[in-house]
Every structure is written in C-alpha cells, then in structure tokens.
Image (cartoon, rainbow, N blue to C red; front, side):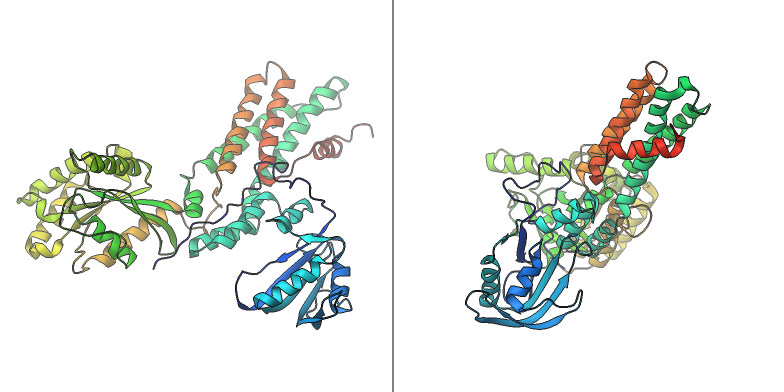
Length: 494
C-alpha cells in the first residue's frame, strides 16, 4: 500500500525556546484559529485561547456555557447580529485547558463560508488576533502542560501516516521519553547539589563523610544509562523520518520492475534497453506499518555516456546513505554450476556495496526465477545455504510475481529490526537534537571525573553543563531547583 508519509512541517521547538518566540507578538493576546483540517467537511473546530476567550463566547453566543459541557448555540456576528451558524460551543476555564489559559471551541459546519464568517467575527473583537503556526502548543509548553519532548510527540502524531509512527508518537506524547530525561535531570541535580554543598560547607563539618563517593557512583551510573540510550542504532529517528531503502544492481536486472511491483503503479520506466534509468526515482511506502523511502537507481556499470555516468555516481551515493539495500541480480547471468554461485554473488556484492557494513544491511533478490528450472533453483538454494557467508536471498519473478510474499515478509522483518517495536522496551531517541544534547551531557560528565581530584569547582561545572544539556531536551531546568535540593537534603542554617 502506498502512503506518502513525508512531513510538510517539522516540530523543532527544542533547539531554543527563545528562537521560537514569535517576534512582536503579545503573549497576553487572545488567539483564535481553525484547528481542524482545511477544506469542506461535516464539522470544523475553531479554537480560542487567552484572557478574552469568555468575551468571545459571550459576544458570539450571548452567554457562557457550563465548563466542559457541549452546548448547542446560535452563533451570530457581534456587530451585525447576523446568524452565522448553529453549532456546539465548549468552554474550558484555565488552568484546566490544553494551553493553561481560558479557552473555548466552536464546533461548526465545515463549509468554507461558515468557517470564514466565524473567523471574521472573532477577528472583529478587541484583543483577539489570528494564531501563528504552533502558537497554541507553544502556550501549552509555557504553561507547563507539555515539555518539549511531548510537544514533539504531538507534532509527530499529527503527521504520523503509518501504524508504527503512530505508536511511537503516542508514547512520546504521553511523556514516556520525557520521564526518562526528567529522571536523569533529577539525579544529576542531586549530584550537583551535593558537590556544591561540599564545596561551600565541608569545612563547617555540616556535610556527611563519603558524600563525594556517593556522587562518583551516581555520576558513573548516569553516564552508563545515557550511553546505553545513545546506542540505539537510530531506530527511533528512522521510524520518525522513514527508512532509506535503495534498489541497486547491474543494468537490466529488474530494478525498475521491482519498484513498480512494490508501488503497484508504473513509477519507473521499464525497457529492455540497458541504462534506461539515469536518475534516482523515489517513492514513499508503508510496508507493514513502517515508513519507507524506496529509491530506484541507475544500473551500476562502466560507461562512456556522460549522463549515465552521473546516474551511476548518484546511485553509488544513494547506496552509501541507505539504511537497507535491495541488490537485484539476474538469475540468468549466474554461473551454470550452482556451487560457483556463492563465490560469484560475494564478488558481485563487493562491486555494488563497497563497504562491508553495507553488505550486512542487504537483501539479495534473485530475479527472473521464472526463466530457470525448479531443479536449478533448488540447487542454488542449497549452495547458498551451505556457503553461509552470503546475505539473505529471495527468489523472485517480477513477471509472474512469484516470491513477492516471501520478499515482503523478509523486508518487513528487516524493517522491524532497523526501527524496533515502539511499544516494547524503553522509548527510543526520535530527534537529532535529543542525540546532540545527550552527547554533550555525557561529555560534560567526563569533565567531572577529569577535575574531580584537581579542582572540585571545575568538576561541579561539568555537572552543571550536563544538567543544562539535559534541560534543553525537555525545556525544564533552573537554579532554584538545585537550591531546593540543597536545603531539603542538608537543612543548612536550620
């Protein structure tokens, strides 16, 4: 089944809260926007949030409904008193709303004229303005309703177009990933608080003996936990953005035919003339719930044609970047002796996939199985099984579609390995920025050990830098929290 999964926008609120503050906008404004999809629909939802939300509801419906209760109301223009629609109105007083502010929703009929009329009516009220992109979620973050990982999970859920993406996004939006980082932050704050207390008060004998040894053990365990989390082979990031799968091989092996068969449409030109494919043809797919960006590439061969040379260069470049390669081989071009096939395929793979790491992430597709006898096919299978050093192979006929189910099963299993099951185990990293900040945090913890016995102030700075990097992932870190721990744990000055 073909599903376009690429995102039209990327939720990247965590790089810097300040960077995402919309210049010139007043946070005390009341904002409104169409929250449902564009276009004609049965029901459209217009959301309002801010201090003038109650005024907006009263002005358009002549009364405020009971909190969190859907009320059928006539919706009129506040100036002209013209009836715009009849629909459901919901009132959410702050802080018990998505944004933490007073909020309201108008559930109206989804015709363009109705939507436009209601939006114009709201815009005519003092203190109300149209919301900017992502502004409702930004206000929810500022109100402490969501941390940055939950904001990103919400964005991923909105854009999820495969089952596995939906599952991963739901876990992140529910706070599973944020809780891991928050737990690490709490542990690191405690370590920092203990070190700073030791620096400031150890001479007054207010600090227990061995406190630094406890900090050493806690920091060492934190490092291990973070490093293990980073060793996820980019499963969550692949699942979020799509697995890069490349079809590679010699000319006329059946690469374009394979692409058309998997996409169930003529996405690429198929011709008996060698070298027909000159550029990379990309198609997004949903295979077993996993997002895939499937690329057909030019046949790899030596050529004097300058255009085809560029196609071959692009093909090799795409193979280098691939998460998984489908190497298509023409069965009729194999050695006549089955025992020689493994050696031939091993050499052929080295010419297609230059690095051994790529050969480990590869599926061999032995195409045109309808052109060989069943006896020869069995002999080749036995030879490959006995060799043991050839990647998993699948016999296929793009002409008869025989072997397609086996290929899809093999492909789905490999995708599950590359992306993992988002419902099992600890949640995976989903954003490049998470990985960057975690790596910086781990590096900062090494600074603690570097200066632990030389300068405890510099060692504490390492912990502080590590805590700051963690806080940038969730958007929550502050000096007051460290002071709270100092007073709670040591009761200094009591």
